[in-house]
Amino acid sequence: MVNIEVRDAYVDFPIFDAKTRSLKKKVFGKVGGKIGTGAKVPIIEALRDITLSLRDGDRVALVGHNGAGKSTLLRLLSGIYEPTRGTARIRGKVAPVFDLGVGMDPEVSGYENIVIRGLFLGMTRAQMRERADDIAEFTELGDYLHMPLRTYSAGMRVRLALGVVTTIDPEILILDEGLGAVDAAFIAKARQRMVDLVERSGMLVFASHSDELLLELCTTAIWMDEGTIREVGDVRDVLAAYKGHRAMWAGGVGTVGP
Ligand SMILES: Nc1ncnc2c1ncn2[C@@H]1O[C@H](COP(=O)(O)OP(=O)(O)OP(=O)(O)O)[C@@H](O)[C@H]1O
View 1 (cartoon, rainbow, N blue to C red):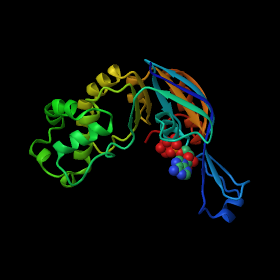
View 2: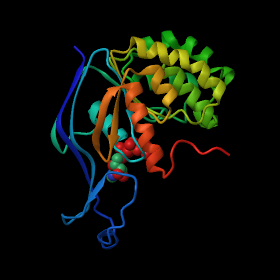
View 3: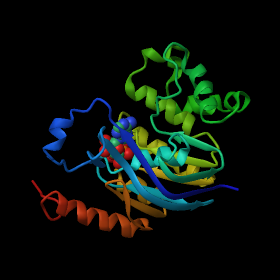
View 4: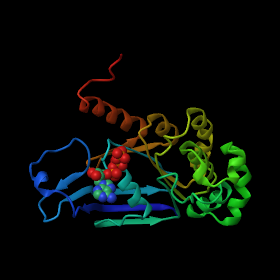
């Protein structure tokens, strides 16, 4: 059975080397979680009072401005962070995809990295060997797959990582956006593989600033704001509410043309 239950969860980061004097001037920024200065050490309250229940088949988008707590929540849902207070119970095997480059070794070849990255995401060596040809073809990296990863450009690395990620069979797929370095044509090619990946995943939680991708892959959405859940609902409704707020927050209404 695949599910995640989070109850009254908080995640705090105490900052031991902060310049507390300037914090007391209370110059508040527009982004980020609340900074508590009551204790001896300033504490960033990245998540506050999170209660959430996710089931098999859920396809959840996470939206919110920079520092709203999306990545922290994804790490909590992956079991990478423990809540400071409250509980987070995760049932199912999690494939966390935060930084596409994590779990790769710059000194070994692209082919070897296909296996290493697959192991990192919970696959077996045999499963990855079986899928290596398909991944190789998808990446279009040709003979570069025999070269050490350190010789690859940023976009070439993302191609390899995306090739691997889109062949796995996850129970719980946790995705943080990180597709910036690849060219648009490759993203278009990767899109169908992403859709197939999500279809065979038990559960998806996906944080992204791309409305288009969220609408394609997700059915419900959670709007994070200053470390709390501001709204949960149908992905279209929540995106519309968030975008309306974002336009107001930026000091304008809608987009400003040239
Ligand atoms: N390792 C950390 N140490 C200290 N503070 C952190 C750490 N990680 C996150 N934070 C703080 O927690 C808050 C939430 O950050 P988080 O990365 O979850 O935001 P986000 O919604 O993913 O933002 P973005 O859209 O910019 O990626 C921010 O105020 C950030 O400064």
